[in-house]
Length: 595
Picture 1 (cartoon, rainbow, N blue to C red):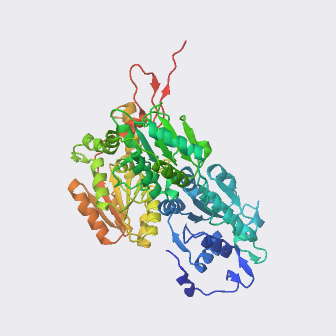
Picture 2 (picture 1 turned 180 degrees about the vertical axis):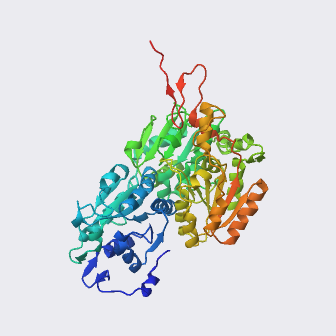
Picture 3 (picture 1 turned 45 degrees about the vertical axis):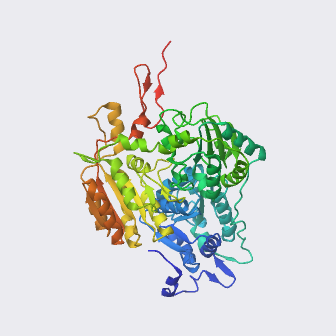
């Protein structure tokens, strides 16, 4: 359960356990104080004896401890909390299996550039090479390839300044995951206050700005283009740049689209919003001839190396904190290393001094593109179940415009993503570059803890739900009224649909899931739960779920034969003239003619 300072009165302190006795400070107290001074008020964890000193330090410093049933979910919750708040997320897990269970969450946060601090316990330094319990693995060596920074703290008096260093690395420049390994003896030992190294630089927030010449060049490109678009990415979420972005879009009359992590920075309700960036692929005639990319990276979220979003001749302006990302995969006319917020402040000022061309036809094309999807799926229900496009639409609509939505799964997440609208940054969380399933329960818990009164909805598939279904217990114990929507087609949708595209309609291999009633499982964990088989039942069921005030699960039985267009696009098409080897999710492999 969550722990707060009011639990201290229930404890019987002893001289050996007291974390601060006079001039001597225990390592766990030093670590908790440093986090508190950095503005951390919530830590996501799963109990492990290596960390007892730290838990006690959290209680003494009024830091909330939220416990989970699996370390990976605790890590995903820290990730979700950081996405929702724009602040540092902190996950604390024990050594050995606790650490290995958390590796997926660590890598997921790093690849999506989420500012997260993972603190992991380890066996005593004094027992190195003794085949100690939960030892035998160099946790720093394992972690280094997958984080921005990793370090083992070997001296108690260094806990504050090294923790501060890790926090700076997580929260500045290109943000990401960092890890501190704190051995149990270092954490439980005491240091004299005069020997403790202070935690300097806890709240540093540098905002490097573009050069004036870069701003002039960007204005010139955008002003000369006929079909410009602004693309908002994840880095913009941490820049507090909404007012400048809205002012720039309105001054230039340039439509705006976003990737999942950038949604809500530019309000979905704004008349210039074309919603998700994938809608650019729906433009039937002409696509953008220029784009201002704000904190986005080239990769599969921007159509990879294809020209599905931006033609080869489109002039691209890319603003990113990491110079290595500028021009990855595509030529960039104007690369700018800068903070997105600082860039927008100067761009807004420069744009206000210009006279901009009117582009009503282009604005209409971008902002009306989402409507084309509605015509692709006319039937809400078929003989085998509810259409997933409309099941997701009904769920999002029932959640309401102010809800925070967390997406999990393959096709399930893709069906729901189209319908998402939000006016708040961090209110949409989705599957990232790791392509990880099972992130939803943790991320939704992290999002709910930010605001206990806010509606939070997790939309997932039956495959993804199986990874961390035990976190229904966590939601129930902490009384978190998260509504989980399970789109159940009793298959691994993206997997079997891809198999059948490649090998024929009757083919499948380890891609079927039959018979599990997820609503019944959730009910056993203490949740309000219902199974829905008719489209018209979806909204009333969700209304009952939220009215219950409990965590809930609404299981919607969807048609297993419906294939999401993204699955087809991920496999590509092969014509008679095109000799290629089809492979799932990546570019097909061309077969070169033999001489």
